[in-house]
Image (cartoon, rainbow, N blue to C red; front, top):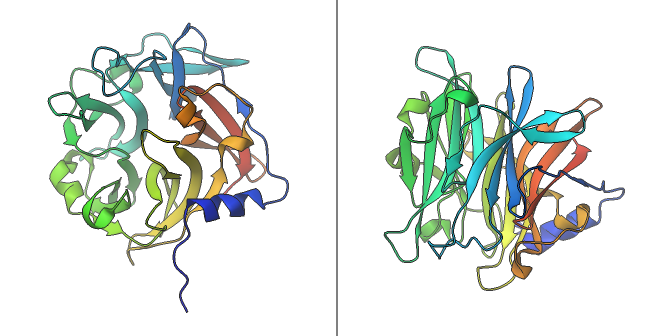
Length: 315
């Protein structure tokens, strides 16, 4: 008999049963004053470790245009933490950055940065994901996205030997509360809303009441590694998010079940943006370390950043 897919509570319970769970640490972001800094993305560039970070006022609220003020800013690792990186662009009206190094049509390396914005021409405001491309972070132009995808967030890219993998996060219809999709294409210049709409949706990874999304993708040869999140709850009530890992077989169009690898209880206490976001971990990036471990950089409670060293899920 085939067991039904697990839900959020089952996945978290399995994580809590693991012996010797590590404890994370805070990653303070300097110079933001009383603003919040969270939901990071790590970018490796010419030997530097850069962190793209969402920075906004504590009262910023997506349904209220007059208060909504997120920015994406870039920070550089120093010997004892992070500092704002000089000469970097600032993306205004932008949330939850993500990035991938890809190949252009001529084979040259290109950095693609994505941010989430809002269209206030609808009620409630609609999500718009904007993509930018340049040879490095310094030359990204916030005024010139090369494509916009309305109505979807949690879109991620991965350069593979045979082209580009694109994961989306459709909602509604057969995708229910939020599922992961996959489509393969030649290169990043073919990215479009129409392309993503054709993607295969993985329907049976988690129970119906559980949401699923992708945060970063990793090339495992014949498979794709996924750092993502599982979640339950809706706005107006408690929302719970945990970091998770699974793999996708793009040739067979199959996926493994997600396993939780980090939850809010694994990090030191810190105030959330709102009480309903107390139990939120939004993983951003995974940094490979020595000794078979990785460091996860995560947003905590929509208010701060933490990192945690865990056993590497990479083969």
